[in-house]
Length: 507
Image (tube, rainbow, N blue to C red; front, side, top):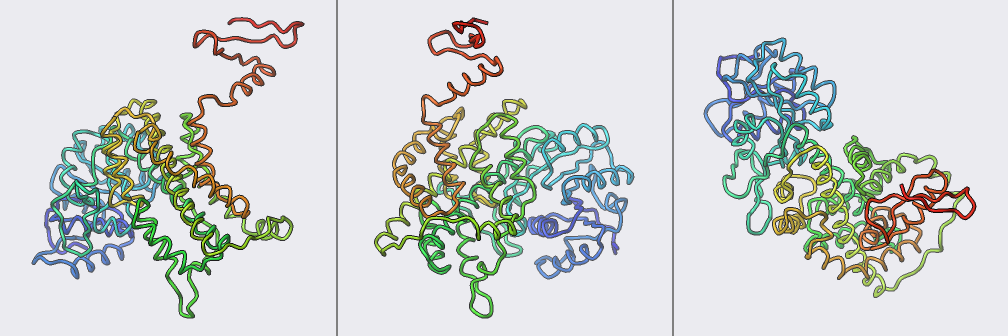
């Protein structure tokens, strides 16, 4: 396929939507790319797209017809980026590169949504064959084309080679305001601002952080969707009216990419003037990263109820037939009528509920990363992670500037709820949050993410929880022992429940 022998800076394998856009992004930033895909039409398409957008006199993307040709087109030591589906396809490509003659000092970067434990195992498996490096990518196809958020991890040596490339192609943020510096035109390059790319840690750490990012994304999306249903079914508002409300909210602390695109989706109409969203079947898909986050939270013992509820919400949406049948059998409360004044008051309360629930969702995600880092002996810079997420990624929001500042004030912060700024916000808005949840409950509208966030908040602020009774129950049926509030910490006790007098013994 290659017409001329030109040594390229970077090899790229996998030219699907994300891959092609990353290639064009790299080309805009001055890199020559040797590209390969099992589907040669995708290579041809990428080259044609580059020719349309190329503002230089020489080609920037060169097609290759085999792994061997790809390696021959690169300067040594080779740097190769993979943009292929997670799982077996990654290993298939790695094995093919070994067969093609890849060298021990060559670097292969996996940019897919690989499960972090798979990344750790791959680094071990391919040691001495080549250097496997991983870099999670967030931002979808637009982010890939004009600046994604990048979460790289693995060999520190490899990072020294990759760093200038990753910082060049990543999204940029104004360091003072925390606002994204937008890049929207092919060929445009932004060289100022903070890059949304920073080394995360050892193998697997970057994919773990991206996994948690996606878990927070699930929660954030579900919170917005619950608000949409409440406004639609509870207040009887039209899609256009809800879009107006969301657009107004997007001018304040709820300013985010997800709120912005929700407005776009709600406003979109098809040929007959009907809102598209009303015609989309209410069955949500998922690719697994939210589930992985929820499972990991259970494994490390970190409460993440908002994230888990978001996963459950997608699961229950898939039971469409059962829900249709149940809707004919199960009754809800009578629908209330609201005056315009009551509607306005409720919308204000709902705004505050979303804000508070969002704080709790991020608090859960960052605490999960903190506990995972401790378990896996990673050193994670949470202020840096929050900075990376301020632009380029799906959960980018003005809100992340406050998180960056919180971890800058205290890098050892255990939970965002313990930060003075966020504690003040929750204390200030909790009354409206509670009233909103009470009203939504009386409407009979499910709000798992909004309400589980409130339960999380209340659990965190409670000095004493009913786990004392629970531990008593466990000791009764299983002799699981308990500690006492009036005795030294760590000392275990057990009641001999079957013995007369039920004596307490010290263990």
